[in-house]
Amino acid sequence: MERLVSNWYNHRALPESYICPPETRPGKLSIPSGDTIPVVNLGEALINRSNTILNVLRASQKFGFFQVVNHGVSEKVLNDTMNVVEEFFKMPMEEKASLYSEDPNKVCRLYTSNINYGTEKYHFWRDILKHHCHPLDDCIKLWPQKPTRYRDVIRTFSVEGKKLGLAILELLTEGLGLESGYFKKDLSEAMLLVANHYPPCPDPSLTLGLPKHCDPNLITILLQGHTFGLQVFKDGQWIGVQPLPNALVVNIGHQLRIVSNNKLKSAEHRAVTNSKVARTTVGLFISSSEDSIIEPAKSLTNAAQPPLYRAFRYKEFLSYYFSMMGDTELALQPFKLPFNQSVIS
Ligand code: OGA
Ligand code: NI
Image 1 (cartoon, rainbow, N blue to C red):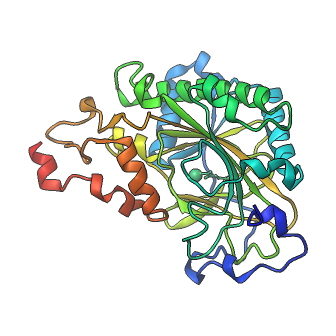
Image 2: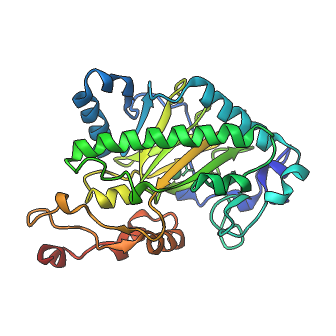
Image 3: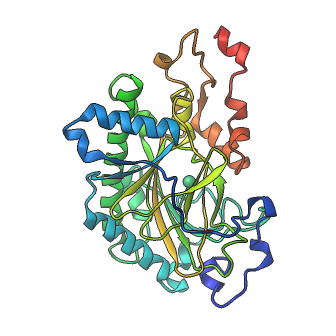
């Protein structure tokens, strides 16, 4: 519990254990300008669905990242969600102590930094609240009891966010030419909520809130609020994801990259900190259940486009992914088919 950044950061210089090696340091940060990730108006799908499909598909192929507006999740739900999560992190430590755990298998927990504080080489400027959202009626009993509105507000956000995620997946299904409802059942059954809290940082140039990574799951929907901090790695450069009012950020995870046989991109991203204000984000990570089999969709592969990955259980991938955290290609390596083998199969 003492390890939470929000517990001790006040008026302290950046401890050495939070300084990243020079090659991963963000350096001097400026508010992003110029190149930015696409913004898709989902409301347009009602009038011109094929154009919306094209926009979502192009963004997923080129960037693996986009923002959506007119997405159907109301401003009230977004504001309530951000407010209740910010309130959670502002509560006195005693109120949150029972949720703190360094055991990654706990289904609802408050922790800090990244995957394993005890074994990581250096730490990250982030506290995290993470819990399962499926099956909702079982998980909800384990969610924070305070603030008292937490369970109600987050139930609504998770239901609406899941609906949005499935609608986006359906646009991608059509865009890729997969059979309708391809992602509807097993492949998108599970969902995790991850609330990230990045307190103001004494030296944002030396540390990161979250290291470079790709999400392991199918698709992620992120409410990033008003404060800049998310960056996407594209063509050797970091591109900032501009906070837009009422927008949600969407990104493709490894699972979708694999099912699409690399037609969609799982983009690397990271979070930087700032010295002025705390930044809070709320992500919904849609994935298959851990026992589901993940493999390139059969209808997307043929002799000319052989499967690039073998079939595997999602849980097998997850445990390898977490052991390789930070190295995107290495995390995928044992699941890739060697080129000649993929031609034969
Ligand atoms: C994540 C993530 C970005 C952010 O939680 O996987 O990429 O801006 N978060 O908090
Ligand atoms: Ni991420």
